[in-house]
Amino acid sequence: MKRRADDDADGDVDMDADESGPAASGVDVAADVLLGQLLLSAAAAGDMSALSSALDAGADVTTREPASGMSALMKAADGGHAAAVAALLQAGCPWNMQDNDGYTAGEGG
Image 1: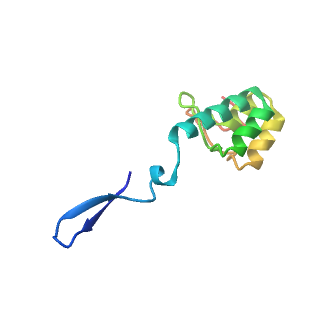
Image 2: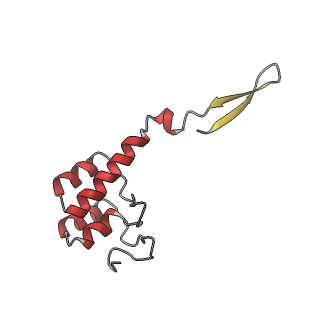
Image 3: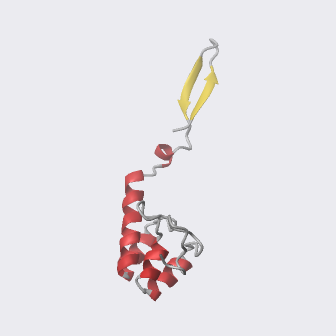
């Protein structure tokens, strides 16, 4: 969390939490991770209901699978799930993201 130093009247420096950090904004990191996992698995399976739910809940479309670096778009394209690919592109998933080996969704790996 970011901290801000403020001078008091007594000359001491107090460290106060910056109000703009994740905890202050109510962002739940664990929920973000779970949404990302849901997005990746729904895309891989071509499960449009789960994919729509993840997107509606605010899943980050740039989430990547840690081991491979594959995005949801890559997983949907790899599985031949055209409707999922279209939904992810419509949601703003970058078409040119690269996995850990340098491949994009259109190139495969």
